[in-house]
Image (cartoon, rainbow, N blue to C red; front, top):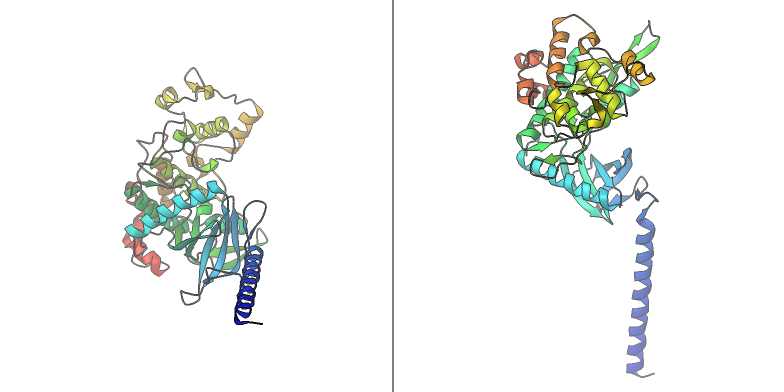
Length: 388
């Protein structure tokens, strides 16, 4: 066999080997990166993304995708939370918008003083937008749920409220509206707790050790100059101007915060409904009549008759509202001054007219927060920073 034939055979062998290796690599990648029917990335503990993020376990799931705990091998093996978006275009686009907001937050607050969750990194993994964050603990809702909906103490409500107002004021100062504030989107930095036994109720009750929190989920956050969707916010935390389609801006966040603080204080949702008309009826039962100016301006005239809410108090829905809602001050759990101060703040946050609703700057100066402003001694280092 001549040199030419040997050379040709050697080249053919190399081509064949290369083709086989490529096919093998393709098969390996295909088997390693799969999506389920809903577009979620299929993964197992121990899988490594980007030769960096080692998946430990799943922390939670939403319509957007899943959040997993990972070991970040480029950050000294520290634990982080990785949000893995479904391989579905509308969720990927929402993730791109969220990344834009988080990058702006990092740019405006490089030292992470304003209590919004910190983004470390983002990347596209085979069609899945992935965002890495600081690892936080349970949401304030999940803690409440796991604690049999036992309300937070007035002191805990005060500290969490102050931090939420501080974080969201930072967003508002930077021409952003969060639009989806709810207890699920307020996370504890550490949700360790102590347990006491309630003999009267024959149950263990948990008290969170530190009320340091972070605001999360900027997937619906909207800059002032951007298109404003007609409907925003999760139902129970939705402001009246949103329901009535009168246009919205930062004050809709303040309404949501008022609903959140009420929930922390009593342990259940203020507006437990899924229907607009019923929601408006609940508002009237709790806060009094809807202002006539808002009724005149709304396009949703189907909810009104002769300038008043079209609502039958004697219907089954009417009886439900009457039995489950009462004027706001009647929810007070104590006559002590600090409880009245909280409800004074809640009334200002749950003002119908967005233009008359209290701002977060004014909220932070409210007498309810004076113990935090005056004291240099609070539960954790982060709370000391907050209270200065």
